[in-house]
Length: 373
Image 1 (cartoon, rainbow, N blue to C red):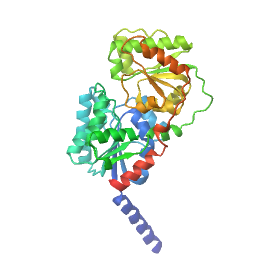
Image 2: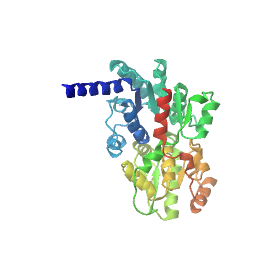
Image 3: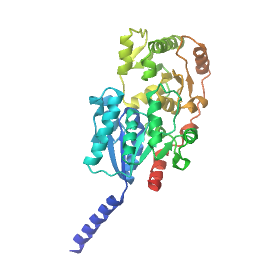
Image 4: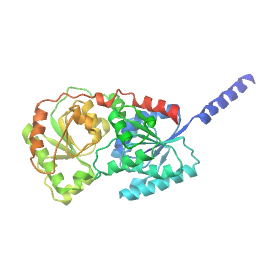
């Protein structure tokens, strides 16, 4: 009888722990955000009643499911499947806001905090959630490129101004938020989530430097025929100059615009998207990469691979300041930045990754949530 009584008390005790735990809802939907959040997810599971909501914006296996397996992320609690249903950005944001609020009501979920990361369409649902009275947290807050042509710039700014807590990667981003009159006491410098993710993936062997990787997927590039054409021209010139094959990742929308505008890829080889470890390995083995991805500016810095960034602006200016990347003007062909880019590459730039933080970001985020939310 005593032993049974002890078991009952033990069960009651465990339930009490669950009851008093704060409830944190994470809303995530695209490949880079799954990657960046994977260690945060695990820490949230350990410390809170964590409800993981997958928006379903990326519904292709290579853009979603495979990362759950590879990075050992548990299955989401709910999948809203907005990607298979909505194509345009305004469809996604509208339907996502509706489905999120309906989900919280139907399942009687009362979160202490709803946590977003990044600048995808998912974060715009913070507007509707804020109006409903929910507390919002934003990881990757404060990034600014100043380029309002970018959907991401609009998304991240909107989410920041709906958020109660801002988790920023660098002091520069904290300064951006203070300039926008957001309260300093709610801004926390935690470092970059990508560091601890990359540190857990081992890449063996000496850097082969036997290829150039081309990664173009931003609308500011693929939607503008001349810019896209100039990027392909630059990449082909690099292949000839360094006598190396150029491999271009086959992002569907970029490929569609190449075909639609009948652009000649010349000697560039189109390759399939790959798993995260394979992608890191491809970056590692490249002499350099040409990429409009913000995440690639960080990953390649950690892998000590230079990055040519064919964009007018970047929300990661530290990458340029610390010699990890070079901004390339692709509005016209063979302008002065093209020559300078080769001078920079030939100098074998020595990268400094101090701007990315120490690799304890998920721990710092958890500490702030425990104290503040």
